[in-house]
Amino acid sequence: MNSHWLLYLFFAAGLVGIGLYALLTMRNLIKLFIGIEVIGKGVSLALLATGFAKGNILLAQSLVITFIVVEVCLVATALALIVNINRHTKSLDVRKLTQLKG
Amino acid sequence: MNGIDILLSPPVAFVLFLAAALLLYRLGRRMAPKMNKVGGKLTSYACGEDMPGTKIQFGYRTFFFVALFFTIMHVAALVLATVPSGKIVLFAALYLAVIFLSIMALVTRD
Amino acid sequence: MALDIALLVGLVLAAALAILAKDLIKAAVALAVSSLLLGIVFFRMSAPFAGVFEISVVAGLITVLFILTIALTKTDGEVQESRTALWIFPIFFIVFIAVDALVMKGLTAKIATLPAGPESGAFGDVLWKQRTFDLVGQLAVILSGVFAVLALFRKRDKDE
Image 1: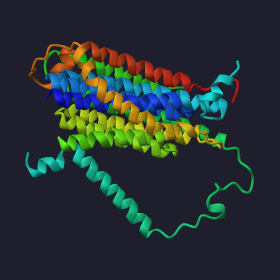
Image 2: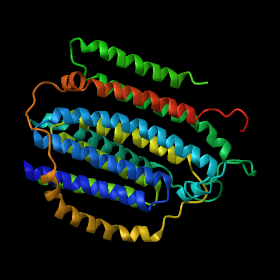
Image 3: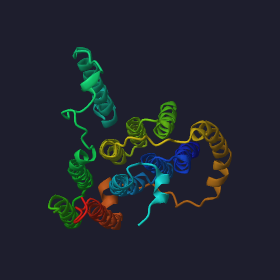
Image 4: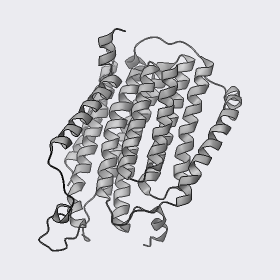
C-alpha cells in the first residue's frame, strides 16, 4: 500500500510542478489561472491518495468535495475579474496590469 | 462486477457519450457542403461599415450569470443528494435555504 | 496497477498540454481532459462521490465557464508568450521529476500522518455528521462568490 501512496504523491507533485511553472512564466491571465487549476488538481489528488492509503477514504472524499465547491466559486470570481480587467486594458497580458493608473 | 455494471459506470458512460458526440460531429462535417473560407463568410454582416466589436460583447454578460446559476444548482444538487436520514435533514434544509438565497440574488439582480 | 499508472501519466500530460497549448480553447479542453482522467483515478480509488464531482463539475461546468470567458475576452492582439518559456519547460519538468523521485520518499517518511483507522458507514454520514462545519464553510464561500460576481458585473452608473 505504501508504494502506491508514494506513486500517487509523485504524480501529484508533478501536477503541482507544472502549475507552478505556468504561474512563473506565463503572461496570459487565463493561462495563469489554468496553472492555478492544475495546482488544485494536484492537491486534491494528494489528499485523496493519502486517504486511500491510510484507509480514511470517506473523510478524504468529503474534504475533496468541499475543495471542489470552493474551487467552483473561486473560478467564477476569478474569471469575472479577468473579464473586467480585459474590459479596462483591452488585453489579457499580465504585464499591462503594472501600467494601470487611477 | 459484471459487464453491464462496467458499461454503466459514470466514467465509461462519459467516454462513450464523448465518442458518440465526436462521431456525430464528424458525420455532420462529412455531410455538410464544403465551406469556402473567402470574403464575407468570414466577416460578420455589417453593411460595409466598421462596427465596434465591444458593444456586441456587452450582452454576453447575462450568459455568465446563467452559467454561474447552473453551476451552483448543480453543486447544490450533488451535495444534497448525499444527505443521510436523521436530524441532520434540518441542517440540509438550512443549506437549501442559503442556496436559494444566493440563487435569488443572482436572478433578481438589477 | 498498470492502468492506474497509464491514467496518471495521461493526467500529467494533459495538464502539460493545457499549459503549453497556444490556443486558449485547446488549453481549456486539455484541462477538462485532465480532470476527466483525475475523476477516473478517483473512481478507481473507490471514491465515487469525489469522482462524480470531479467529472461533472470540474470537467463540465468549469470548462463551460472557461470557454465563456475566452469568448468574452476576444481581443485583437494575442498575448505573446515568451519563447524561452516554452522550450525551458521540458528541461524544468525533467529536473523537477528527478528531484521529486529522489526527495519524495525521504520527505514523506518524516511527515507525521493522522492515525490510520479503517472507517465504516455511508459517505453521507461522514460528510454531513462529521464535517458539518465544512458545509457551513461551503455556504459562506458560495454566497461570497455570488456576491463577488454580482459586484464585478455591476452596471456602471455614469460611464458606459
